[in-house]
Length: 255
Image (tube, one colour):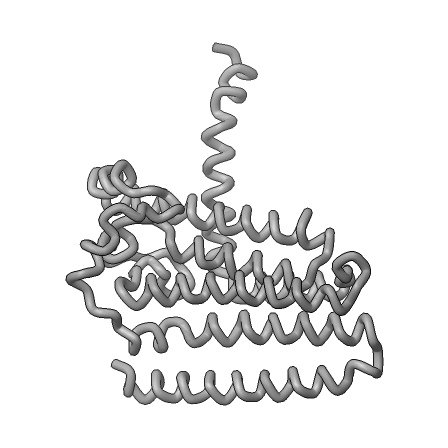
């Protein structure tokens, strides 16, 4: 085999390595990359009313909120019954054990299913061709890269145990058969949900309110200030709830 053939044969391995590296990078800096992406979207694009009707677009906003709420509800369902430990340690992949109970007995990446619904809901609210064709696919590819890096990490740490888990459980879509039996012996931990999920809930609701307000200002200008004020009031309520949840967590009242 000559040098060119060797290079060609090694290409898939190098590509897989590059995707794994990208996944680790995005995982480590995701708290900065996501806001940066949002800022770029708001600066470089404009929302597009559904059929050029801002009034009709309100129904699209409602649909987006419903889809995002479904994503949030699914994340709450997952965390309430079994929290996964590979969520990271000091911004790096970490896992003390392989979580296989709860919804993880039916889907290997249920939290990312919830994330996809959250992102899709926000994209529907903003309703921009650029977001549909560029931003959302980039976010999805970033999620897939993170999943790839997590899988390599878990395969390296747990070996055959993880390989057997992969053979038994779907990568994304939950297997519904046996779900009731799986959850029958588990207790829903609402304290854990608040501890682990209050930040994500605050973030996506804040972005949703921001996008709706941005739409209103873009379409109606100064006439939208009344609506924007109500959105601001709603956001202050969200801030208050976030502050309470954070205080409960920091004072260990939720442990």
